[in-house]
Each structure stands twice: as C-alpha cells, then as structure tokens.
Length: 342
Image 1: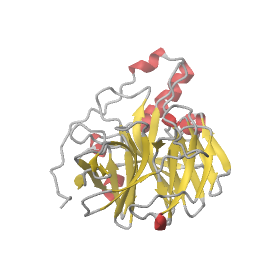
Image 2: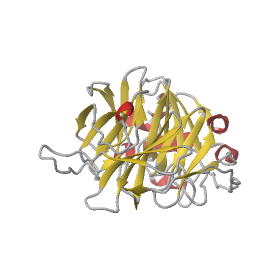
Image 3: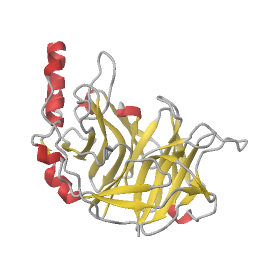
Image 4: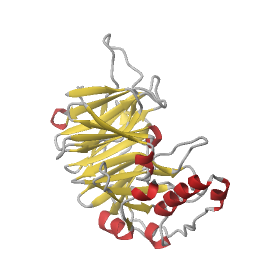
C-alpha cells in the first residue's frame, strides 16, 4: 500500500504585510509594488493553512534495476497513472526522463527522452519541465539547463508509451528560450509556455506557431514573474501549470520584492480568461509540509484534487493531495487587475 492518511500539520504563518521597504522606492514605483503586494497577500491567515493535505507514498526510483535519483520537474495524472518529468542528476551527462507509475504500483516505467542530434549523440536539452496532456498526448518542454537557453516542445502519444520500448516524439518545435512549464488548452488548441522565472509567457497554437507573447506590465498585472535588478518586481515563478476547461491553474514560488524570508513562499494562482484584458484572478498561499514548500516543483489536477510533488525522486518518495474545493474556499476572489497595475 502506498496511500495513508497522515495528520495535517498546523502551522502559524505570519501573513502580515511587510511594506516598510516601499518608502525607499520612487513614488510611482511604490504605488505599483504596493498594489501588487496587496493583491497577492492573503487577507486572513486561515486562507493559507488548515488544508486537508494527504501524503501518498510513491515507489522508489530505479532505472535498469538500479537505485537512481532525479530532480522532479512536472506532474500529470491520466487514467489513474502518475506521469512525472525529471532530470536525472546522478549520471553524466544528465538525462531528461519521463516516468510513469500506477497509483497502486511498486515501480516506475522509465523513458529517456533526452533529444539526440543528427549523429545520434545526446544534446544539452536535459531539463524537462512542467507538462500537460491534451487527452491523448503529453506536451513536454525540454530545455538547456540555463537561463535564456534553447528549448524543444515535444509531443508524445500516450498510446505509444510501452514499458521497455524507446519513445519517439510525434511532433516538436523549437523555442529560443528556456521554457520551464507548459499548460495546454485542448479546447482552444493553445499551448502556454512560461520561461525561466516567468519573465515571459508564450502562446502557441497546436502547430507550434507563436500567437503572442506576454511580458512586462501584462505579467505584472497577473502577479507573475520574478524580475531582479533595479527595475525588479515580485511575482510568482511558475513551476508547473495546468489549463482545466477555461481556467488556468499556476503553482510555484513567490519571490522578489515583498517575499518574507522564512515564511512559506508557495502560491497557487487561478485565472479565467487568462490572456484577455478582462481576466479574473484568485490567489492562495500554501503552508509548508514538514518544512517543504508544496509548490516548489510539480503540480497536477485530477478528479477535483490537486497533487503536489515537491521533492526529488529517490529511494523514498511521496506526493501530497489536497481537495480543490477546499483550496478554492480559502482563496480570495479578486477583481480584474489590469487597471490597478497601470
């Protein structure tokens, strides 16, 4: 058995705004940052704690029968199976892996999906990211492990995923940026890609044609993006995100100006009409579990439940399950942020 109810930790989280730093910024910048921080901070501590969190055990990771370790990146649940993308860091060169385990299983199916060049040699695209299924296929970004590195968005048919057999992409397209996570709208046939720290968000159609790019004020108004430097700003750095119907769920870590050291930084943002000017947003902070940030790596949504896989995979693994309805009750509705962030 790999599922067991554990007591939920009750943590006292200091959610009081820390805004004294604003007075050292220029007046107009103070207003913009104050609006951003006030929109992202919960209005009541109960909105970010006392969630019903259920840890679920996962099989130990073994590759070719040998113990292995891999850095978790993305998570998806399809037909009762867990799909995980991870970068294997205990070998050289590092490898991009796609993993699959049954909810009640005892092992992982493992595919090495590191792209090769025309000569059949491994490329530097060793960083698989947050992924999503369109119902029949998995859309997975494979990037170089560096900021502003190149990426390939690859599409794999789940029907072709046979344990022990090599896996080939049905379709792929290149991106001249590091794409860390993609979300897929099967209904609108759109793919949303977040780059490193979510400084930019790209929107492609299912043929890989770029439709638009969101950056700067458009992302700031949505509470997205961690930008450093003199003109830096706070926001959510997306680790994994999913499009469910017409709603986008983004999870990751809040960083930059306004982040309180030592307090939980995991955040879940939900959006309706995400790319449109009249978008709606909700935000909620997530409590740490045994000192671990819930949203620091992979997230998935299935059957009305959120699943978080925050740790690397190794000899002992676990996933955290949270009822989506409970989460949404604790989140705080916010009106359109477009006009407020100007």
